Image 1 (cartoon, rainbow, N blue to C red):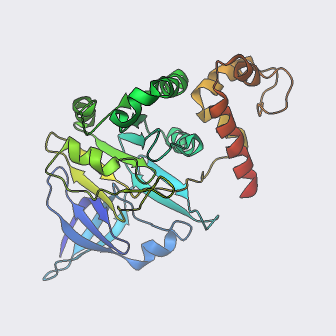
Image 2 (cartoon, rainbow, N blue to C red):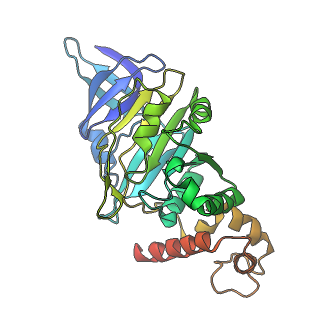
Image 3 (cartoon, rainbow, N blue to C red):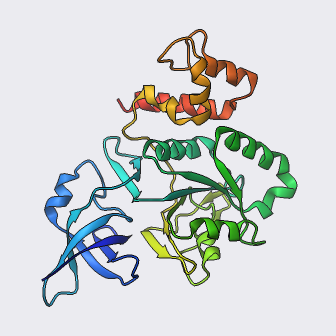
Length: 310
């Protein structure tokens, strides 16, 4: 029997592919039953990016995952229809790239803000990629500038990209070098096209936009890691339509809005929910325009969501 440690590079439901990184040599694996039972509140006990121990019986070509090693971090979301269950998107990530498009499909800021909060909770650096800028920059430069002002003002890096003109691709490729990088976002925003632009030898599925609702059609059904020819790895995740918060108390949510955390030092009361208290510096900053109303409304929506799932 052969024993070893490897990284999960593909999750196809009950079957996995592993590789002993940095060597890229894939082999199939299944999960030992008792591990699955221990993670009953998680829809996927093993995630892409997990480091695992495995056994490969003599004469067999499929390994058995025997242990999931401790995670440095992970991105997790509440399942959309199962309020008590959650899904781990990926684990052991160096950088999360959150891909958004102002149009085609139209951006939903509360969705983006929920992912940013989750990355903050689990200590994952996040960069926002504004894709398809060639399609709308001339007609909507004001909106592009406003988006940058909101999120760069909050403290995030925003990178403009276009797979058509090549804008931002070289800088993005350099940023990914030597790291495990998660690409995530709503359906249709261009994640798979960006990955292919980073390394043309890769072939992630590329989807189309539904003209009826300008929403992305689901194309990526698997969570999968790819090696970049220039170094590093990218994890392509299925397009998401919802993102519920997990393991976060109502009183903690404001701490993961960097601009609100900075302003809250001036609040009269501690703790402050930034909703009804007198002398709230966060509400004053919203009224003054130094904290965007859009981000504050996202925060209020998360408070309401937290109450719904209690």
